[in-house]
Length: 330
Image (cartoon, rainbow, N blue to C red; front, side, top):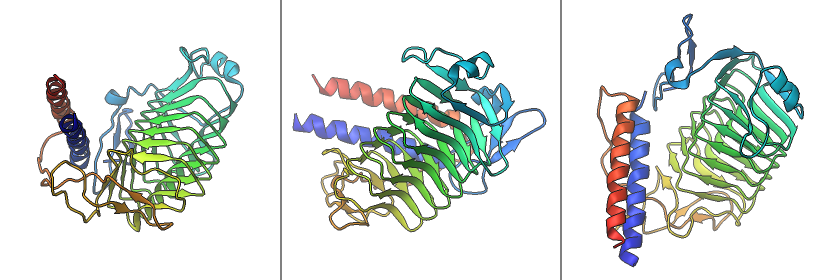
């Protein structure tokens, strides 16, 4: 049983490292909207992800959207679809929204119905999106770039933030303020001028599976926030600190696996994919990741291929490892 547990942990680590390797090789993010309507996100250096109209299926350019407990009116105006239920949420999708460095691209306020915002590109606002006293929402596969805050969630509970890119914002990529019980997973918070993710007076969140990289000050900053779980994330080359936590009650591993830290200096003598010594997190004394992910493999360098090719490789790796895991259980 112990052998199977170690095998499962290391296989999961291999998948996570493969995903990050693909991320570091893939092309990168700022807005270029051509006259033909195609979209290409690029930046001068570092990690690169290309987004274009064909992949995002962008259907419309839009001005800012403000919904204040008036989803029915928004639906009647053709802004969204759905019914606001768990099985059929209101949906805002496939929009490009450009601002003038003020206000919010999308603001949802005083909302308790179920809603989803997906596949949108929002840039040049104070807040790419602001959820204010808004619960039961999902932000899925959006791109928030060149705002002050990419995603700003204030006094809101029970939202899901998954698969988004928060890149090149002048403050923080994702900001949770006086909020609780969020799932923050599978996002990329890269190259923001202050923090990748910032929690202020916010508790009971699960933050897992994110890539938090090259932010100028801190990768993730936890301030006056308790009982948050942070594991299986990749913290890569953030400027001042990869993380900062001023509370003792947050959890930086799940008892088996923690996070990858680009500045971890420990070793993995038994080659189980977990560092043999904890990773100390700045802030209050005693905060640490007890099971830091260890990677001693060489950096991949495969020029001349695109993101779809790499995702294909990742799919094959996942399938092979899944089959091996199934065999190991019998």
